[in-house]
Image (cartoon, rainbow, N blue to C red; front, side, top):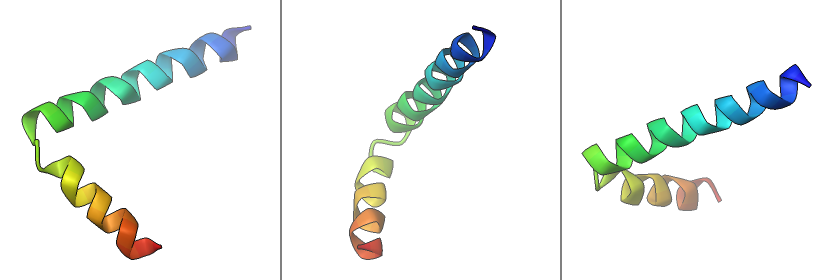
Length: 40
């Protein structure tokens, strides 16, 4: 039961960091999309 709670908390933390990064660096999302295209 504990690992389910921890997994949810970890997902929220990662989502929070991701959103904060995009908010503070609006162009970061665009760079990430370009990098993903180059990998493919």
